[in-house]
Length: 242
Image (cartoon, rainbow, N blue to C red):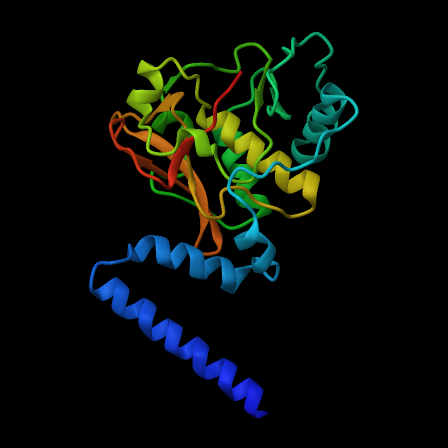
């Protein structure tokens, strides 16, 4: 080992010790420290991820959103869909992604496909259709919603609880929309994931116990969990839907 390499290793070890002491002293939240460290462990491109501003947009806009999602459903789910008649509203600037929810698609189908494609866990088990009985929008008919084209959930909605989003009439995403967005982004980018540093609050859905689903990527896996509807935090943000 060269002197330069030895010096760099010593600096890394010193920083790790300092981080450990900050966690012990309560200066840093251990769960959030773990999420940041997990990005470094699990992602070879961690530098670009950590350097990217939370509000940075991602250019993954296809020529035709309907054809894009028809191809997605065919290749990912093996489903033939006709989305030609589904309305897609012209969103305000910055809402560069569209999610098309196919008629009849279920939470269980979407979550099972997540488990097929990448490591996934749910604190509410695998039967999300039963666990999440309340949703502002369902797949009774096909529909489409626009979202901001960002890896991390909306910076504008940090520190806003699901209750606050509802009170301020900010339409949030449902759990099904967030699962489909994860699957689409993973398929579109050849393996990418969303919410590497934060959590998306799925304010448009509720678990059977009244909790709000939240989704993020941590500990090397896609995670579905839940928090109280009045809980707000810097790392929990709803994705505004239009």
